[in-house]
View 1: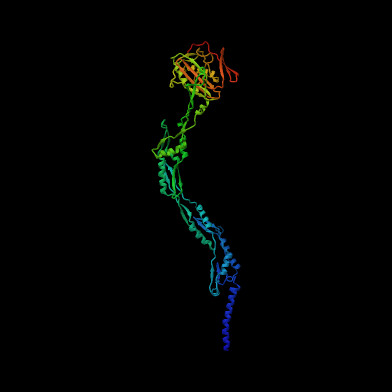
View 2: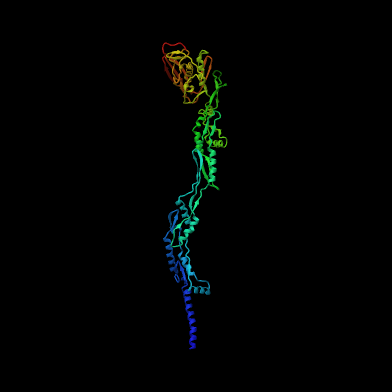
Length: 555
């Protein structure tokens, strides 16, 4: 009996050891590719599960995580963020492989001990969930626009003609750094609570102190008028305070720290000046000629005439509009005044270069008429001759005595003298008498045109005949009509020189008429000009005039 009990006592431990050894052999050798005992994931016991079974549990959990968005409250507005927007994901296979390795140690005794503990304890595997925090942050950044409360940068304003500040105001933004972990926490769980997104102030780039400084600077720019003067005429371009305020500009310069840059708009200042700039333009003076008595145009002693030398042209002077803004700024920095900046403008049509290129100009024609010395009419004749003297007629241009000299007036120095009024010469109560006698210059001028072979545009003989003039080949003058006009139908300019003595008046024309020569013949009341051209061809032109009868005595 004792042997029996001894045998049982020996057999029981052996059986136990065999059972335990068999269980260990099955769990850790035969089924080593299964999850150990006492392992849970996402609340599910996956003991003895194959990797595929463990993956299925984890995949189901991932599906639950992906099924529901996170609700966020942004400044009272409800928005949602989908899990896919932040790339939420779980690596099921990697996690299943991790579950298989739980409670399995290196070495037999360590592994046996870990296996033994698995029968009495549970180990939970945390599921690593991948979330793209950068993508989440980018989504949150856009919510600042949803709030639509950007900072107000402030501005400088003009109120009741006074420069005043409109101070900056804080805005509101999403506090991304604080919001990301709050929302991330909700993505890690299936049951999700709404998240109140924390907000933070969004500061403008400048503060009130910088705004006050800029307002003071702006006031210095626009609170006093600016006067730019023409020293010669005393005229001014005025930039009123109202005008300066229309040019006031400011902008925020973002550096460290940000500041407000105050300025006057150059285009606006230029436009203000341009309104009156034309008043200060000094017209160009065309090149002219003068006679050089010491030089002649020909070597022949029988046909010598003074040579012409060029009096250079003078370009116009115009307001330098590009320099106006800088000049205004300098005036503001000083006493509020300055000089109008001027630059050379367009040159005269008849420039020095053009005048030089036309040389030499030969004497084409000259005509002289005579009068008694000392008469009042001589004053008028000589004054008109002086006004016409040195005139230049460009090729293709029509010259008018009246357009050039203008109306004869007492203010210019003309005097009252005899004139034809109502068919007879009378003096001196009529306005027509002012400048009386100038028809003698008109006749002299017309004959210089006639023998210069230039095209006669308009002339009109006197209504009465005066013996001191060529019959029919003479001209009267009034204002605005009759006039004496001719066309420069040559290729170069015509220079008109007038001279007078106490008893004569002479008009001489210099130019190059292409080699034409003209002669005059009279038949009855008709004058004919015969023109011989450089190719020896001949053309004629006739004028007929009938004087009133009887002929009157000389004026």
